[in-house]
Image (tube, rainbow, N blue to C red; front, top):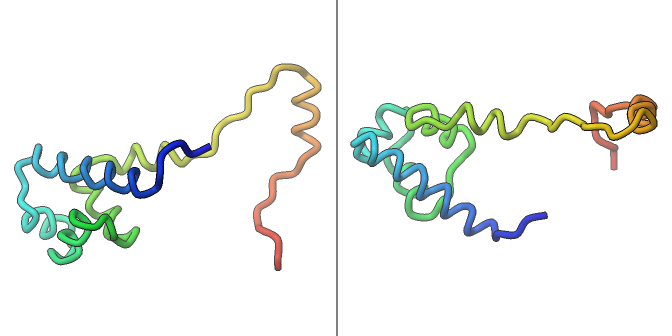
Length: 101
């Protein structure tokens, strides 16, 4: 369940990236050059939080945090309390595709 609004999460992400940039003593121009992202895109991101996933990942590769994002998105392991739960989980097949609609 999500207890914080998406806009607040967006602001926190922008603030974290900006703080990392400043900690590295990089200007917006310097980060945009090192990340291969247009300066206008970086400025728009720092002002409005809007950016493509590709550009966001390029920025993270420079300021750090890319590995943490990848780790955070890994599927969680199941923990079983009984053998019955193990057997039930084996009966269920993991879908590799979504349903057609």
